[in-house]
Figure 1 (cartoon, rainbow, N blue to C red):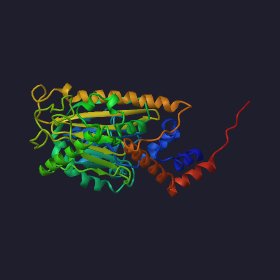
Figure 2: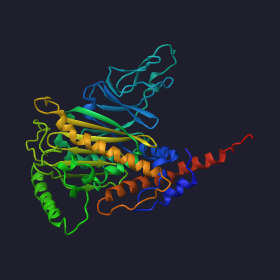
Figure 3: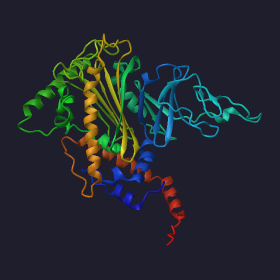
Figure 4: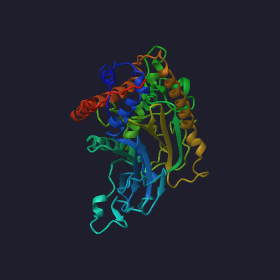
Amino acid sequence: MTISTEIQKMIANRRKGYSLEAPFYLNQDIFDLDIAAIFSQHWIYVAVEPDIAEPGDYITVEVGKNSVIIVRDDDMNIKAFHNVCRHRGSQLCDDEKGSVGNLVCPYHQWTYDLTGKLIHTEHMGEAFNPNDHSLKSVHVGNVAGLIFICLADEPPEDFEAMQKAMEPYIAPHHVADCKIIWQEDIIENGNWKLTMENNRECYHCVANHPELTSSIFEYGFGYQPSAANAEKVNEFFELIKTESSRWESCGLASAEIDLLESCATGYRTQRLPLIGAGESQTMDSKVACKKLLGELTQRNLGGLSFWTQPNSWHHFMSDHIVTISAMPVDATHTMLRTKWLVHKDAVEGVDYDIKRITEVWQATNKQDSNLVERTQRGANSKWYEPGPYSPYTEDLVEKFTNWYIQRLEATIQKPEFIAKQANANSRAVPIKVCR
């Protein structure tokens, strides 16, 4: 990959406190750099344990041009491999998810067990050593039931710190003991960064998300103090104090952790009160599933939010979980995948109604997708120029874009990247135009 001098200058001269230049949302070379420097070098969220609940269960994930298989082996360990046969490179699994006894290449029937070991071939001769042709592994990490992968040879080491910090927050919800009751995939007509920027603020929520704001306090996601809102804001923060004290006494971590910008594996979390009954992100803020998660006995436990760079956000309530990932498709399209989870023993029609559980975030996702598309169209205009972030309601957006630019800078400053650039430039051949 070669990156032009203009792009390198754009990265180096990015104006803090403002949105990104239009090419960051449009340019194919920058998109390729995003895949190489962000999605191929950092921990990305891809699944939950219930996606692969039993031995042989697998899912596939597309990261740029790379396909990855995540599978549960016979010892219940989670493994990840590049979805490429070691014979002649055929893709092993085509479906998004399924269940297998072994991984068998459809082309020539090379067969791998669930640990990636090659266990069967034909016509390869006595000198062939199958031990030299195991599947190429991908780093896999588990944060209390949330599955992450990293394609880098040496992934960021701070992932374990995030695991340790987040375990007390997520573990009481027993993700592994849940089941997925609904999954919705949306192809958004916008660059993946616009999807993430939109998620990182609630400046737009009151005007665009009537369903979501029926249960969440907008003040929990940024506000500008004023005489008009002082009383309500004070009430909200007093509510945080009293509710956090109650949650902590129940063994539920709730304090804010914000490392979105300062760590390679950036993340943020906080448990916040909900409006009204304070039970769940539903239209009436009451639980939509009678069977609570894990060993929880109280319904009004607010909402635990967990955001990770570069591609996910999650909401944990007493009765259900909403988990969302964004994966880049190309420079102007993003795949948004949402999953709704409840206790694995909950019975549809008895304990829960799918419509009640999914209606808030289905509506919110549709509204957000429209906003992302509108912003993408604006970035295409020759009149677009970076605009200022609100210091009150868009600070998390700036932390995302700062994190993103820092990661690009770290990549293009690596000696190996500079060497590749110099080598590519030295080999460049002018194109002759025949007239």
